[in-house]
Length: 265
Image 1 (cartoon, rainbow, N blue to C red):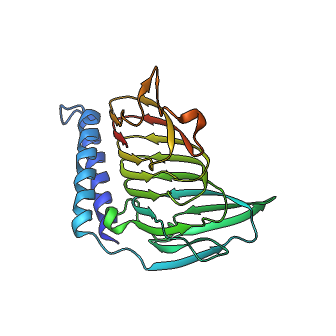
Image 2: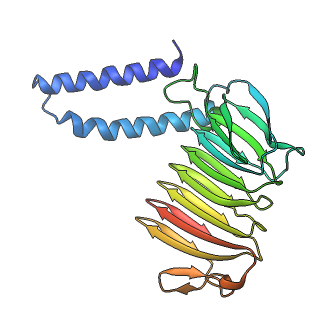
Image 3: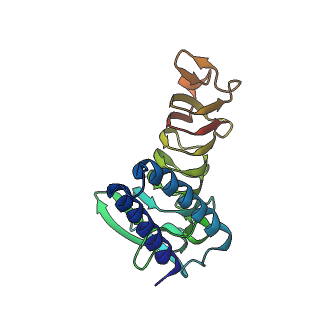
């Protein structure tokens, strides 16, 4: 049995034992009130421990995916705990994606008219219930084509996400992220880009290249939101560049956050 399986087995036995003793009135405690905080504390310690002393990831796989003559592409990415870096380097001509994938990758493609639909997700065969931590989770480093317009949808978990989109023709972006650190550089010359970021307990930094106008809307819970008001002065319920209506390259950005820290520059 793997070390992580031993850990969760012991935790479940201890939790079940406390519940049993509480139900039999042997222990005068509210086991449920005790177990949830204990579970969260232990899980956090486990992840931190794994970040420094975790087992190595599985082997790294090099992947290239051709454009297949597509005129545009929709890319849906599901990523678990670990690191996801969408880097600025362009793949070779005629390729939609090129990169390295540590921890396992499963993907599929299909044509929808002139659009190529690509789906990426972790190959979890043989992976533990909960990986040791970001240093040993899924480590993906890849680039996407600059040749065609792109629609990107990303679902990321615990870990680190870096998206460098400045040279990509991204028309739509939807990022959903959990307990993570996310850094997004928006497209610099994509015409009109519509983006939405939904963040849970996350730290999110968004960089909007110079020369790109923006209109920004925020909905926040217990969040600290910092927006560069020199570039994007507040106008009612939105933050908007003075030249937004006439700009050749513009961004519509919607941000929904929970317990997060959000910065937009």
